[in-house]
Image 1: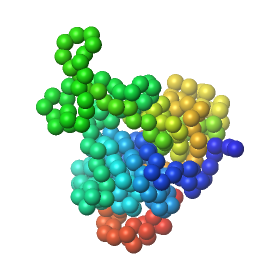
Image 2: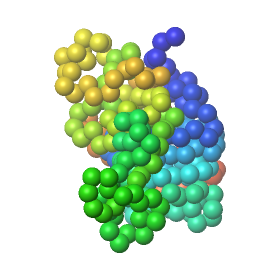
Image 3: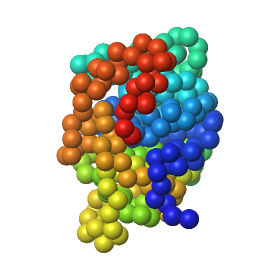
Length: 262
């Protein structure tokens, strides 16, 4: 069965309760179209993770799709303020926030990518986050290190610039944590600005950082990161983000999801 699918087909692969590592960073190259489709399909009980999030985790919180969020930071950038729906969901007890540093999110994914049970990291100093993790003795010298447990996402959901039909994908510019997510996750869903030939990918092998062998679905979605940016193709949309942040209830969210294409 081919990997090229519609957005609806790809989102249907995700089961309630699955753990998702969501690619991109803040408003940069987020799989926004896929996030909206998860909300349209009414997914429940999802566990999501990344280093720094805003629109993606805020919308999933608003739509009631997530039970748990692990992140170092969830907030819109200075122009837009905090992430109101994420914050309310946490305050109301509808979402459990597993607060991390960006460092520890990456460490948990790196351990999974390496196939080891934990990743030792240097001390976090006086941070209260130290209490989340176990200390172990340094077997090669004096002192202790923190042991961050591996987390194996069921899915890495990534937006890329182009991919072939097998899921080999090119990213221009910063990769963020997408590469390590692709190694840590059991399966990958790619949304892409364009599906191209294998020959096209081969011409830019140094940028083809996502290998196709774990990819379960490739979805061509031009503008699929919007309202976020996808350098160098388009910038984020302030107008769209302000519209989203003006929504006050679930009826408004439903109208928004119905109006935004895809």
